[in-house]
Length: 397
Image (cartoon, rainbow, N blue to C red; front, side):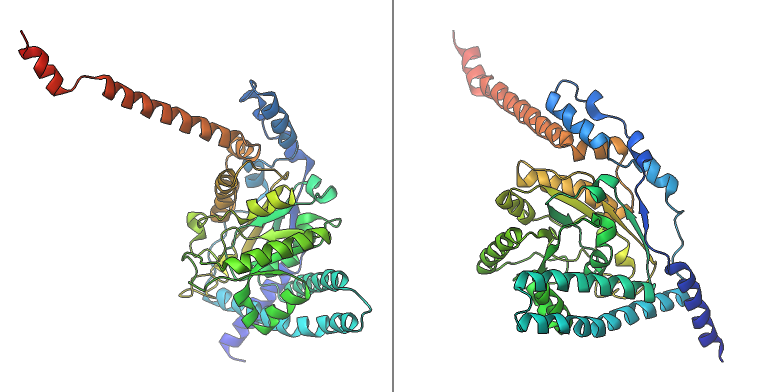
């Protein structure tokens, strides 16, 4: 047995010994006692105070997360990177085999009219989640952590779920960790996806069997502006309405494509999630992912160069109805963008203010004050006599 092969076996054994444990779920009632109430900051507004008290009982503080989070791990060396990549490729190849095999009986039952369309989609979703979850345990290429509040797990509400997009692995991890993130009483969910994924027969099979909703847009490359087909957008709205009537939650990636620079924050956030929430009269709830781009990077020049194997999923407490698209995009960019870049939340007070809407109201007040100041300056300039008028006055008898 040569040295390289022996090292590969030892590395695989090390990863297996650390990877078969279930994802860590950080959901402790102690979190509730740590976050200071934002009511002291906005005591003049009763509505803001009520919202603040609601989230003060559920929010997780950055100090608490840092206290229980493991220390920052070093980058993988070449051997560790090769082992992680091998396990990841094995997982992907296994999914390519497992999904057709496990979804075939569901397709047969549907074709024989033993189950209806909605049942087929719900069962197919559970099959995809089962395959993702157990194959990640069989090939433990990632160390997973889920941060969620008990209220989210025990009392799930119908919602439009939004998440950042940092890797081609995102869908697999969302499927595998869905129960950890949304609880055992969660509603079935349908994801909006780029129609170009249907060129891959495996993703096409899963998306169609689970009834996921396609959005047609040009393949301009990750990080470039999206170009949507207006006809496809209308079809998407119609399919979303039907999914909501059938009892599904909706998941959408507001960035529209994988982000090649998640360490710098989010890409431009589109208003589709707000449009769906307004149409369905449902609130929006946020999820943030971190670390997956270090295993499979959206930048094609980097690709599957594995530099780390730690990932985290953060489910933010409380769903919220936003007043307009700009308020949603600003909140999503600030809260989820920070976690996606750093793997930790904003400062606890700042996070609290973003979640209850106080920060956005403060931003609107700042803009109004700036606009009034600019208008006052213009009025002052207009009221001043011009140099020509002053010269005429000085030369007049």
